[in-house]
Image (tube, rainbow, N blue to C red; front, side, top):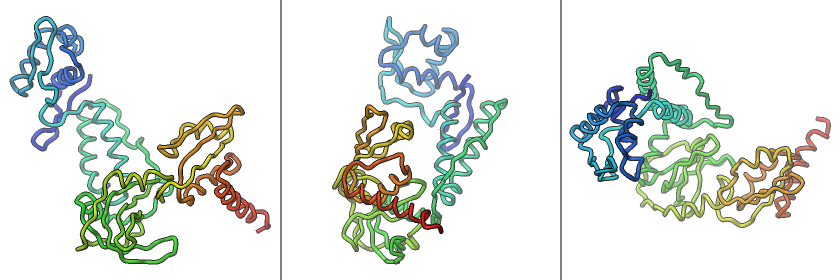
Length: 335
C-alpha cells in the first residue's frame, strides 16, 4: 500500500486518507482517453461507491475539471490540471531522499548545512508513512575520490551571481602557474565535474570564456562591470563541443582502441556526447571522440596503460607515448 504525502500552505504532512485521491489523479493524468469505472475500481482497489465518492471529492474539494463521458468513463477536460500542493507517494519520497543525499554530498559545507534540516524532516515523514519499515539511512553512501577543498563560504554569493546574471570581481589562484590575479567576470554557469565545482564565466580581462575552479577562488565580490550574458548555444559550442573541462573549439578527433578485457567497461561509458564507437573483429573496442585541448584526454588515456592504444592523430599518440615512457623510466632507473 502506498501512501501520499501532501505539501500545502508551506507544510508537509502525511495524509493516508488521500492516497486514493492521489492515485485517482495520477490515473486520469496518465491516460489519453476516458477511464472506465471498472478500470478505476481495479486501480484503486475499492468498490464502485467508494470510487464515486472520491470522484465527487476530487471535483468539489480540489476543483478538478473531471467530466464523465457517457459510455466511456472519466477524464480531465483540462490536461494541465494539477492537485494543489505537492504530492508524493512513498517510492517518490524515497527517491527524493536519495537525490538530496547526493546533492548534499556535492558540497561539504553550504549545501549540506542548508539541506540537512529538510532531509531530516523527510526521513521522519517516511518513517510515519511506514512505522514498521526498517529504514537504514546509513546505507546511502557517496564517495568523492578526487574532491578538492571547496570554499563553502563563497558558494552562496557565486551561485547567486550565476542565477541573477551579476558580475563578480574574483581573486583567483591558478594551479598551472601558481599565480594569483584579480579579474572581473560575467558568470554563465556553475558546473559540477568529477566531484569538483567550476565557474564558467566570460572573463573581462582575457575577453574570452574561461572556467575557474571554485577551490582556486580566494575572494568573490560584486563588480560594477556590465554583465555579459551569452546564449546557451554559444556556451555549448565552447564548453560541450570538445572533450573535458578545458573544452574550447574542436580541432581534432582521437581514435582509441581498447583491449577486449577493458572494453567490457569502456563500452558502457560515455566519454563525450558526440562520440562514435564500434567493436572490432578481434574483440577490441574502438572509440572516436572530438577534442581540442589534449591535457585531460592524455591523463584519461594514461589511466588505462597497456589496455588502450591511440591510433590517430600521430601528435596525440606521441604525447601519450612520451608520458608513458617518462613514467616507466622512474621505475627502471632503480630509484
